[in-house]
Image (cartoon, rainbow, N blue to C red; front, side, top):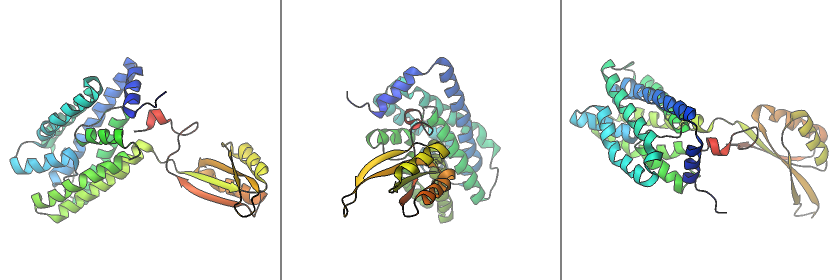
Length: 301
């Protein structure tokens, strides 16, 4: 049986959603759209910080032509949404259309409120954090905020190993540089760069979480005793990987186990107690999927 593509998995998840789940998703999208609008209209836009993406382009065009930023966000998104409908289908992109419309509406409604702070550093820090959280919530609801989100979604269909935050960072750099010329202010562009970086980092945290896990490989002549204690005392999964020494040719069982960061010192202590001469490799695990950790199909975005 052929392996299903990410697009097919997304459609499959959409088909399985109950009306209550759909309602919950749209409530989440609405709240996230409002938070996104707050970040733009009360922190970034009034301080002339173009954070990249369609929002950054809209802020730049607002300064050039005077049309409201929220209106520009909607106008620029229309052709991109049409591409999304052509590629994914209306049913699949419907929530994105809703999110785009609500974000544009909230942005225009909140613009008269003005800036919460005129300090560019505080505006960039707060605005980027709010933006990243809102985008993460939208993605978790199975939607996007439109614009470059759809472009990123298309790229992830072809390159699923690329993380969303990293892709946003790459697409935002050009817009941030352009803002330096439009606003004729390098400081503003540098602050906008801070927005892009923080948004990228926080977005990955919201989407993928901070597993803070360790992956440990243990090579020891007392593998069974060590594995037994790890299973009993730490209640973690342990896997034997069969290997042999290149020099000695002796067959050995290599212990491989993943665990939360906070229990890794105890695991290391067990190894030292059972075999002080054991060869142990401890490395950080960026993401772990499976029982006790994250579900691949429900959280991989």
